[in-house]
Image (cartoon, rainbow, N blue to C red; front, side, top):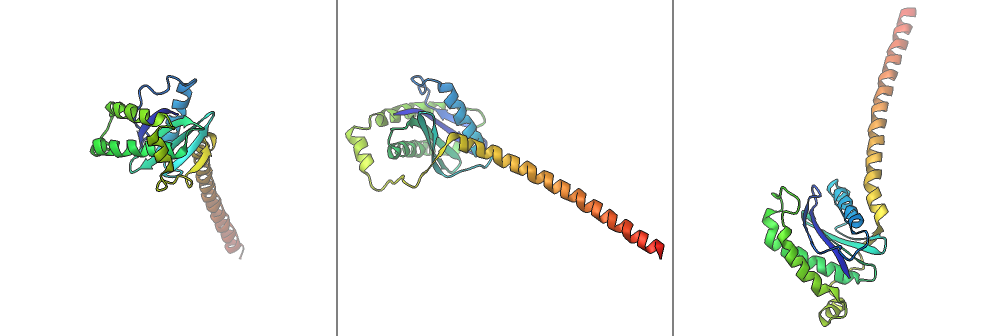
Length: 200
């Protein structure tokens, strides 16, 4: 079952739209929304894992697609079919791009496209029951394959950004220290050369 849906701009992690009724039936909904925002922040730093990914978190799983400048994310029960989750996101992407595509770059405030909630809500209802004829047909659709979509743990994904930042800091420190070492070695060589010239 689809529990939560959020849409954000990739370059800065700015939330663009969200299903407003999402999370009411979820224990710790705010905790999961914070994880989503941390994931968006990682993506905005350029720590893009893949354009399509599933990320496990507690009893749920985040599924997201990045298309162009936008990340479309949904949180579902682990038992919810991955194929339906990604088809749901594709449907949101198609409509969001059609309706708001030209305004995405210029959006300056969070949730600038909050009216898109109506479409999220309507589409979410269509995908809630996996046993409807429509959803069974979608599950049987051989054209839409999701087997290649990577699944990771949320700690791994959120930790990648921190680890990359640490590696970058260590690299900068090492570079700085190697310059100091090179300068000192040059000075010692000059002193040795100067002492050798003066003693002759």
